[in-house]
Length: 213
Image 1 (cartoon, rainbow, N blue to C red):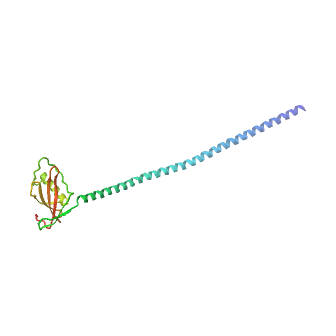
Image 2 (image 1 turned 90 degrees about the vertical axis):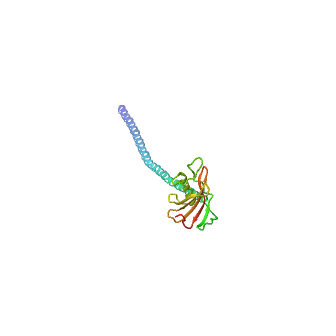
Image 3 (image 1 turned 135 degrees about the vertical axis):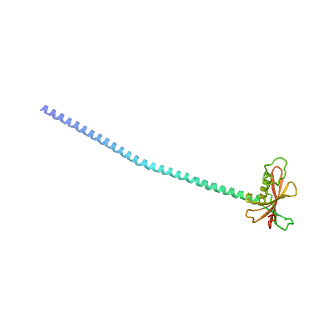
């Protein structure tokens, strides 16, 4: 009887141990499965978040790029405004410099009106040393006189027609009769020589008719 009782007691102990072991293994399985599941969820969430963050970064980058692309336009507008202001200032200065003051005309009945300007400056010269007026066509002095006459008449030298060029009554003065390209207006321009600076206009007479044509 004692032997059978011992065997049953041992079986109970073994069964108890087996049950405990099975329980522990089950718990471990559950823990491992839960760990794997949570890990997968974190990875999925991270993978889902990263594209979103990347998209936001790309959008910000694109916005910055657009701003940079827009910036040159703003700079161009500012540059255009500055150029416009500079042009306006230049034109104002030019108008101020070219301001004409009407003077009394000579007794010549062919003179419609006469004027002068403090803004007329010498045209410059390539000549050095003592100046001698030259009426030889094509000479340096001749060409510089043409520039001064065109300045006084306010016409383009390239299209200006020079009808007559003569001494103005002294070695340092001259008078030229010219017209614009289409000959709509004829001018008698008085010029004088400024040592070291060249010829400059001193008076312009607008003629009623071209008396040198």
